[in-house]
Length: 280
Length: 308
View (cartoon, each protein chain N blue to C red):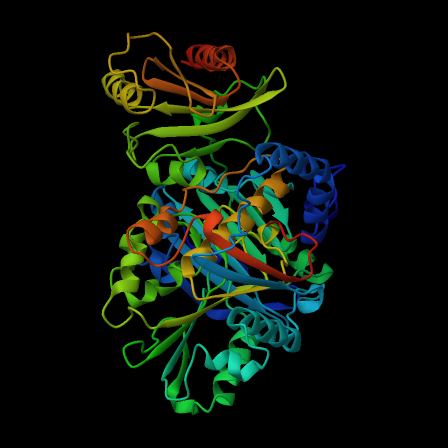
């Protein structure tokens, strides 16, 4: 898709400064040395950066990340969920001069270095123009849609594929015992049950055999259960007195952790499992 | 729908957002204070108050150091740096204080942080204040290098490490220890496993033993998850730290950022991944102390919101 058809050349009195900066998987570190790995963990294809200036004001920067799949545009959007929801694109968040949204295969960030009434208005206007120019909407990953709404905390779901993303969101260890890769889909979310919060990680593998293998290593390395029974939920009480559990359900693994009790792990896991089954 | 906000939703400024979080969690902060008091019975070592410290950090804050538009007051920043260096040295005269760390014959590298994509740079006012004092010591301009990438550290006989504080999506935290990553030609290799090997950079032949001072720009730290800046996660802490111990500085910075994250969310929000570089820099690379019980933190100035 021609990015020039998406990115405006001017927004109000703010004019684009040419040329755009363009980055691909090969040189994304030239733009963000120290965080490119997070984008590369998704099906990132191309980043176009356009700067807008007006007189002596601080610039506005629009970044368009083109992903291979719409699910991955949602995924990178879901990495940071702080901000006020706004009605632009398919999901959008705004706060303190930064508007982020996703639509179709694109993740977009529009940032005013200094937030004023005028720059906020311009950031919204630029974002609306960009969103309108992206004609095709995309699908949210099915694994996200399959999460049970009951007890699911708003804006808590993060979608990703690889260990580097998991570690940035919720560190479970350096070892990749879940065998996460670009071929796996994972969602980390927070639930509330009986007034207590806990987290759940749902991983979808390409087939049951891969899920089985990952379940065995997760049981052994994370829950210290070296020979778990198939299709049975396994539990562990952590040193901090919290509870964790794991269950393999077909090509899925459901990991619950940071729970107040074994019962909460069980309730949330079963709820997720039922939703997965219903959707399958 | 003004500005595209969904119905019944208001826009939120960084100030409003953070203020809301602070007010909303005031009770939580009190609860933590009580819990901490219960967890630290009488007679137990109080953290960051070591009497015979292995590491000493001076933390100075000034409410007027950063204004409502997030602009730094250069004069106040310079005064804060002088006060911190004087306190660290034990000298009352500012030039005698600086002379304890840097000599007129030195060739000095001022290693600051310039991070264009994250936009969490060492403030120019901080760099200028340090360079001015180096000049006052009698060091000519051609023997003062101020750079981030490209600092000719091999030429330098002394280094002043001048990082910012930011939570890092791959390394946990990026501050004093991480600021020397540019000195290595394999930077990306330090991004994984909690940057556990970061300390080895400090032992490179042209780096080892040259660091005389660490001056941390804690005026506007960043505590968010990344991978890129979200201005909601930056706050005006209005602090400067001075030390000779980069590990102790990072230990203090980590504690402040962790407290800020908890306050922001109103619940525990751990720093992910945990920065293993700090403990490893202590245990494996002997660069300083990461044990809060062995650190003496000297607090000067504005107390409100100090978080440690």
